[in-house]
Length: 147
Image: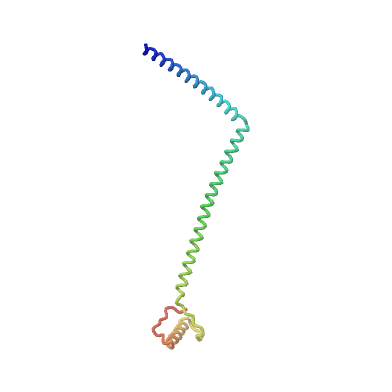
């Protein structure tokens, strides 16, 4: 008898649960249909469509602007890198020129060699310079280039 009572109670609870579940499912389904109808109604309004289109256009413009700025940023970075590279090359060339000229000597007041061919003029200038260095007792120095 207790077993029959338990089975009966269990059966009634199960039936009640099923009835409530079905009722809730029907209610949810009905509310979902109402929501769909409302959304469709709102979407059909031209104002809502225009707003959606307007928002989409604004998003597209923002995407284009961001992409353009990204491209401009890359172009600017490339220009800066090129300018820095060029400046470094100029500085390096200048340092090499300074190093080349660091041992140069300019002698003022030597007598002018009379006109002649370039080879004889060059030889006379070298002789003058050798005589000057010998007179200063700098015989161990050598002339590498004469301009």
